[in-house]
Length: 313
Image (tube, rainbow, N blue to C red; front, side, top):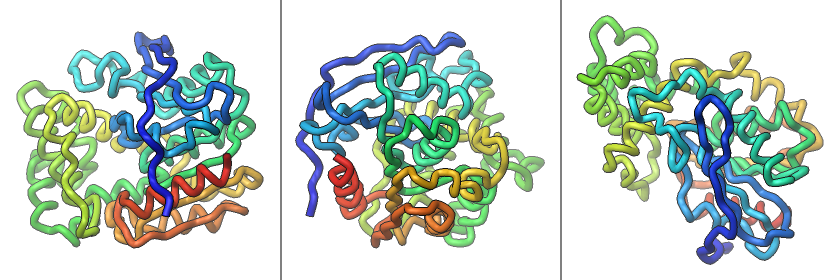
């Protein structure tokens, strides 16, 4: 079994001015002369902890980590009412990644993405294929409308009591429409935003997994994190993740032929059914799919991810 690498600290870090009044936090750890690898965190708005530095061999990789616009150490905080979310889209994040790559003088890098980070990694690779050496994606999502409808509505068939509570927290007139859009409106109102953030994150903790080992996300206990996360997720999901064509990343995955890809997904991941990873794998020539008996994360999944990074050293 492959364990996580020992904790390390970054040897370089900073804030990158990406325009529109945004500053993006970045850091680099591992070997300055090693193979470049970029960590693409989930959410949107999930940021990334120090543990993310531990998926790569620090003696073989130059490990780049960044916090996407509006979350983590990046500024301004998307949780603040005055923060303009119109300049926080998938295209903006892709452009930020390219600016960071150029800033660090990297010609090509490996992308390691989880959940929403797998969607963003795929979208980046579609536009900048020549800059990607490999893709390692786990807890795979692709931002399709049917995935968003599943996670906000259809999975309620499995958790009916919790879903009705989630639905009934929005005004009656909004209950049959886009629930992410309804929550986005509540989160933009000073009178309702705190309760809306709590209700949204309660649902996140409900649907994320059928894995009996799963435990609630402790970060949702932090009101500031809760607000930033809820505001960014609803902003993206209400807008179909700002992807140009629904289903594009899956249906056109054949365009990634020649880019090595490893997909790792949990059989018990109820919020992100295995169907997405399976369809992506079938349409992506040369990709590998590993299915583990876990949910939206887990020990075995991490071991498979680290085995993949080791394999690409």
